[in-house]
Image (cartoon, rainbow, N blue to C red):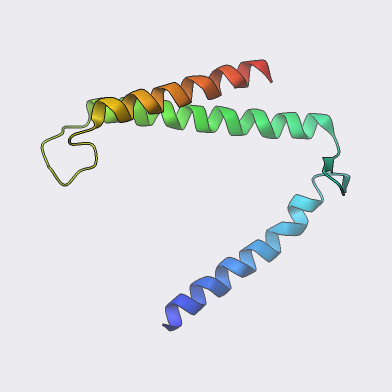
Length: 99
């Protein structure tokens, strides 16, 4: 029980410590986020590139990893999971090119 409380306390502390850093990233925050367009564009591009690459790696792993253990999620539905992750990855990577 004490470790759970400690984890919640640490998570709350991390959120409180990082909040001023995120708030200082933009000039004003009121009625939406406004600030430097270049900072926001860089953030969105980095997010799309990271997530798109992660989904593509996940799609490759869904196909490559052996499916010999029935306890794995990948055992029966590896084709559909690979297709979904590849589709999401492609959408994010193409979106990265248009931002």
